[in-house]
Image (cartoon, rainbow, N blue to C red; front, side, top):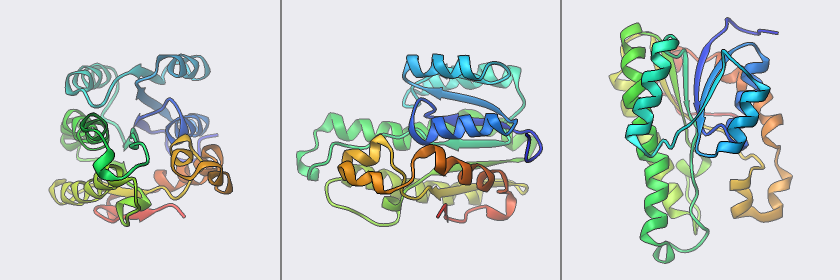
Length: 230
């Protein structure tokens, strides 16, 4: 059953964890999800479960060229998104900063920061032209605090906080950009840091039932506000 007017939602990182749970819950609520991820097999299962008008594409957000082609195709066939959620992210292997290789550090930066910028670069012009829409960039508790052995990840999520609040100052009236701490959820990413202790926290499917109504109610009044889903 649709719980809010049907929306067009662009969502990155839909292959697993929070992204997949959000995609499933948004579709269940009657909205159209235009999602992307890097892994082919999970995308195929999403396509089978949630056919057109939903759309799930293989895209690496770290590639500006891939994001541009994806956005151009979607914006030919769909209106500008009502809700754009940058969820795709990587975390570094847990170890001290000086033991993180240059390649590992670059991968986190390229996905978590440059990937967000790439998506915004190619979808925002249509949203700005329409003077409507909400951008939600997934931050983290580690975007507002720090922890040993995840310095690259912390750096990117602190960067998301600053990038999003600055973006909020650039948007026309009627729009919003929000850095969102989703809370602590039992995902593969959390287990890479917490191990089995991650099982103390709710899983993505349970979290999404709270997160989706929260996200759908966001509007221009939320612009620039750092928010948290408790």
